[in-house]
Image (cartoon, rainbow, N blue to C red; front, side, top):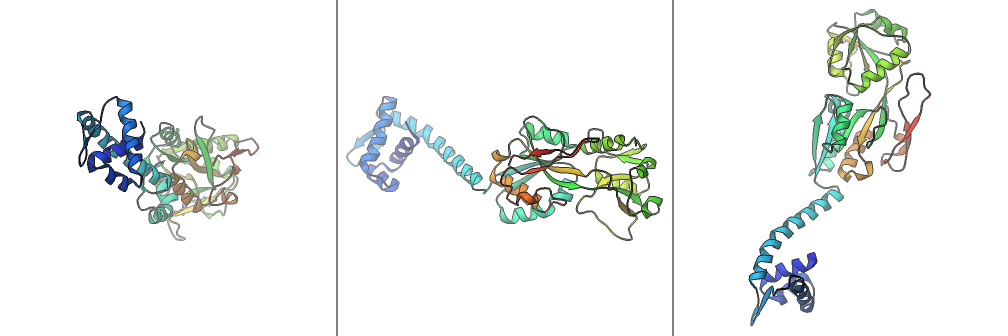
Length: 328
């Protein structure tokens, strides 16, 4: 029994005439009869009654017709949707992100993606940390996650995209605001506004500071970089933040961002269970984000992301820079 057998049988029940079925399916009447005979042999019952002017389903035929009609309609719809996914049309791309990721990294890519993929939905799931973003991908609740690149995670492919320099956000009336750049020693006296302990970016920053025996007191805790900068603007402390895209920078504003070149950049990028297993739409969206990412690491690999490009892995304090092989 094949799907073509069932489709031919359903058509015969609808038309009541094998010649009409052959004409619609573009085959011979003999081929139509062979499909019907194969089904009847499989079930051990006559499915069609041969009439002087056509055919009609027997009692067994009516049972099979009722069951196969809706099942094949659902299967055909599913196959059509799978074809749309394969060809990059329709479907949903599920992205796990931090609270401010869309604002800083994805606005332009979203507009471009929606223009070229109007029938594909984008679903963003806000998570509290890179760790929970990775958990959402591992559990199958998200196709992609935008994360701070960390240590390898079993079952997850991490794809570094951009390296973000660190800056100190300070009020313009703070003495440190007058500096063109800061050294590690300058950070010893700050009153640090920190992200949660579960934040991968905080763990990396703390490790780099500790490697230089710098442990600034923490005055305030926040959930995201934007809030840290707002509190620094209000004079509640200093925020060591990455140079995020789409920051509102004004020469006469109350906040100044001073570079800290001695701190290794923060590496951010994509995570997925298997890059090659992503739908075409998910890969198109991910690559759209990469094309506009600041401090791109993947420029040498080309916009298409083809091949096994080697990109820098964020260095651990006191260790030589290593690299990871990106599976694309």
